[in-house]
Length: 281
Ligand code: TA6
Image (cartoon, rainbow, N blue to C red; front, side, top):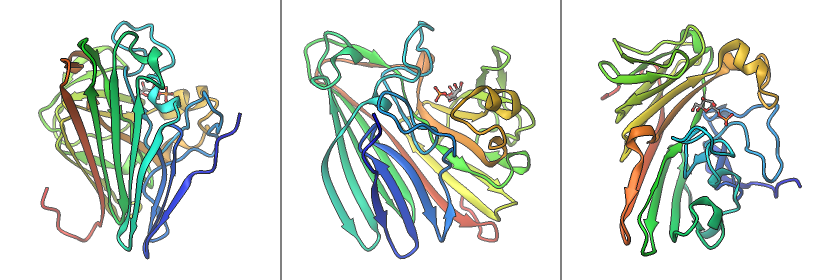
């Protein structure tokens, strides 16, 4: 079954589309240039994930820590969230979404929880995702805001802010330590310990993407490169040079354990600055 049309949010310089399905921030253009990346081969079907934008991965990441969880990246991104509030201003819009255990009990059987997701989008993007344990049973979860960013050519991009960080290289299965900026010269799928202030420098598009996160123990950097892109039917074979995922969350050994009544939040902010502008990062 096809999806309802996304909500469109416009300002003088920006336009964004957000689906209630998955509370999925899908596209975001600033001064006519895409900031978020979306695949021309994405599916738009209930029960299937969208390819691009910002999938909300919860309550597990990938196949989960057990390695056998389906669907990949959990149920939040393939569930219909409720829009609880929408406020539009000349600077953009704030959308408040909610998903609860009443709607998706199979996500964490036997538990009660509420996800609230505040999306603010205009000339910059601010996300805040809060998980609240509303029941009497503790539970654990992984979470990631799986952000696809548009880049001019991923082979010419450098990512700063992760120097010295330990990471799991999911391509080799080895743990490594980052030396200097991250560059992409092959399939890249890395779960870094750390994050905070990340800068994606894009000489082709002449801009920097400033990403800052809070409450996220992990930063994931992903580009599928040639073979993996070709192996995904919802990812165009020639699309991989134009995207880079800079994701924020709590995954693997940083899974979150919530006691009854407790809550935990992850925040993600993205801003675009011209390459000529000084960065405070
Ligand atoms: O975040 C990177 C990653 O975990 C990769 O391993 C790759 O699987 C990617 O997510 C996309 O996952 P998806 O289920 O959306 O195809």
